[in-house]
Length: 95
Ligand code: FES
Image (tube, rainbow, N blue to C red; front, side):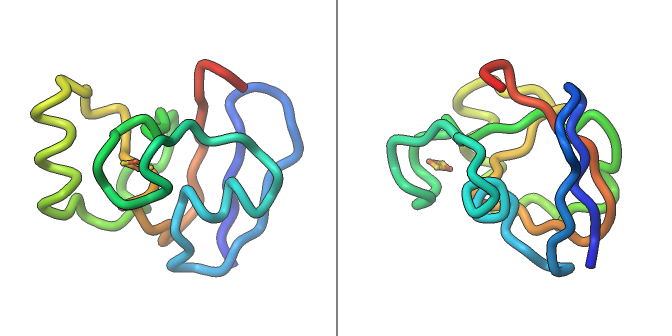
């Protein structure tokens, strides 16, 4: 198991290593913005990685394209395209 912690006070989550970041957050009852339901089209599911960038899967081609096209900085990851491989701390403006 790995730990997802939150930059703003809220209890951390334990999830299996390799979990999809967006799915793990949704399963825990947290809202994640999306209009494509994880299909890798909208880029709205971007989540800021406050700590632990190295503990995430490498960016795939879909994420590379979405971040470049939408000018999304490297502190963000497209959560529906990202697997959690170790402990991270995350944030979203709407939490
Ligand atoms: S939910 Fe649309 S790109 Fe992730």
